[in-house]
Amino acid sequence: MIALDLSSLPTNSLKKEKVPVMLRCAPFCLLLIAAAIAPLDATAAEKPTFQAGAAMVDITPPLGELVVGGWAPIPAQHIHDPLHAKCLILDDGKNRIGFVVCDNVGISREIWDEAREQIDQAGAIAGENLLMSATHTHSATRATSEKYRPILVAGVVKAVAEAIENLEPAKIGWGSGEEPSEVFNRRWHIGDEKQRRNPFGGVDTVRMNPPSGHPTLIKPAGPVDPEISFISVQSIDGRPISLLANYSLHYVGGVGKGEVSADYFGVFSERIGELLKASDSDKPFVGILTNGTSGDVNNINFRDRGRPYKPYEKMTEVAHKVADKVIDAHAKIEFQEWVPLSFAHRDLPLKVRKPDAEMQEYFASIKALPEGTKEYHRHQKTYAGRAQRLLEGPDQWDVLLQAVRIGDLTIAAIPFEVFTQIGLDVKQKAPFDDAFTIELANGGYGYLPTPAQHKLGGYETWMGTNRVQLDASDRITETLLELMQDLK
View 1 (cartoon, one colour):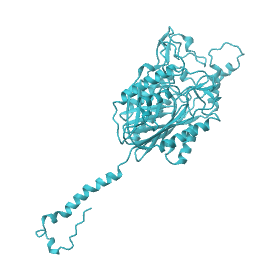
View 2 (cartoon, rainbow, N blue to C red; view 1 turned 135 degrees about the horizontal axis):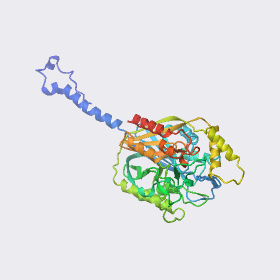
View 3 (tube, helix red, strand yellow; view 1 turned 60 degrees about the vertical axis):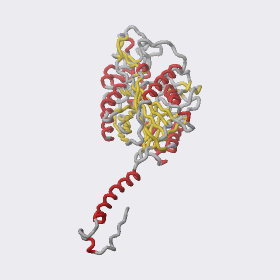
C-alpha cells in the first residue's frame, strides 16, 4: 500500500482551488490502486491447487482359499497373476475424494465399512468420500474368509494411505471411446421351452447364456453399452499418474482350474501403462479398470461363438482392444489444471424378497424327493436353499448409493450387478455433460434387473440371484439423479 502524508500542509492549502491536481486526486488514486492490488493478492493467495495421487497394493490371497464365481467354489492352487487394491485420490484444495478398486468378485458393505473405519481413524480423508468397488473377476477368492478378510482390509487401507502420500500438483482430463465388438447381451428369447425352465417349477420368457448357435435363438432381451469412459491424471509436466476406465462388460474368464487371476481388468491396467509410456518414469503409474453396468452382458456372441481360445488368450485380446480405444480417445482430451470436486451419498432402504407360502411348499416337496429322482431343473435344490436364507434373513437392507462430481463429469456408484439399461438411463438423465456408473460399489446385493426384465424371468431375476424388491432399479436411479442434482 502507498502512503501519502498530508499533515505538514497548511489547513487552508487543502482547499480545492489551492491544492495541485495531483494531490487533489491522490486519495481517489490510492483507492483505485488498492482496489486493483488487493484482489490480485487475494486471488494469488487463495487460488487452490489441484492434486492427485495413486497407489496399488498386492492383495493376492494365500493358496487354499476358495475361488468363487462358479456354482461350486474350489481351492486356489496357483497364482497366475497378482490381485491388487488400487486407489486414486483427487484433491481440489477444498474437497478430497477417492476411488478404491479391488480385484475381487464382490465385497460386502461390512468389509468396506471396516476399511472405512480404519481410514477415518487415520484422518487424511473421510471414509465416506471414497467410492469403493470390486472388479468382479471370477478367479479371485472369497472376501469373507477368516484368513483373507484381514489381508483385503489392510490392503485397502494401505492403498489409500500411499495414494495420499503420493499427492502432487496435477492436471486432469476425461473422455470416452467405444469398443462394440466385445459386448453382447447374454439374455435371449429362445423358442425351445426346455431351455427356459426355471428352478421354481415354471418356464421363463428368456434364457441366460443359451447354447451357442441354437436353432431356436430369436433375439437378445436387452441392450449393450459399448462406451469406455475414462479419467486421466497427469503431473503438471505431463507424467502419467493414473488412468481410471469404465467398461460395461462382465469378466472374460478362460482361466485354468483353481488359478487366481485379475482377469482382463488386470491385463488392461498393465497395457494402458505401456501405451501411455508410463514406464519411462521412475515414479509408479496406476492403471485401473472398473466394471460398468454389465449384469446382463458378456463377450460371447451366441449366434457365432467363434474359434476356441487358449487360457488367458481371450481376456488379453479384450483388454488390449479396450486399451487401444482408450488411447485413441486419450489423444483428444483437454487436460485442466483445476476442476471442482464434490461427493454425495445416501442410504436407500430396500425390501428383501421373501418366498411366499406356495414357493415354500414347492421347495419342501423338492427337498423330499428321493435321491436319483429326475430333476425339473438342475439348480432347484440350490435355489431352495437360497430362498430359505432370504426367508430367515432381514426384511430390509439399507444400500449405500454415491454420486461423485469431477468438473462436468459425474459418476454413480451402485452396489449390485446392474443391468445395462439402468446405466444407459443414468447417462441420459444425468444433469451433467458426461456420466458413467460403477457397479458392485460399496457392497454386493446380487443382480439388479429393471422391472421390465423381471417380467421376462431368467437367471438374473430369480429369487436368490436377485434379492430386493422388484422396482429397486427405479428407486435407485431416482435417488442417484437426486444426488447428482445436489452436486450442481
